[in-house]
Length: 189
Image (cartoon, rainbow, N blue to C red):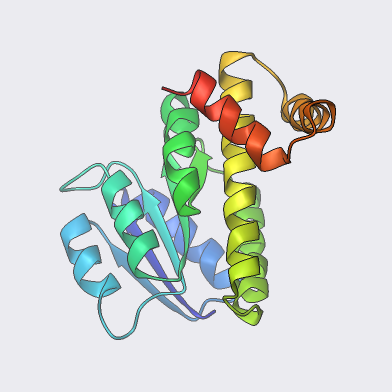
């Protein structure tokens, strides 16, 4: 990973992120202020390895841009937004593999998330896209979505939600995915 794209209308925030991204080893960093310009560059030849979107942008909010980038590229995507809406956006964007970070943004948090994303992308690039791997990834997504639903509606912590799903699977002689799908259908309309 060596190319990064920062999309932000706030020049001070973009400067902080650019400095952090360079410290984390990205040599080529493009700073853009609007979603339409970002879309042109994302679809181009030199697609970035890391995309950081700081909302709101000049010409749009940025959520649709994150979804588009996730569908059209293999880049790691970090979505920065205000804390009040971070959980809601995390629910929506988690299916796309986008990391949502709430403001106020700290250099330490951003560095940790970039390293985590880089490690995951490196690991994933080494795996072949076999049906087993893709099925396992989808299973993890469904289980994580069910955990989010339990945390939102029943006020569980993440460990409590994890334990609940595992216990239900054992008690009902179902897979964790089956339990997760039932939870999602029951609570998340």
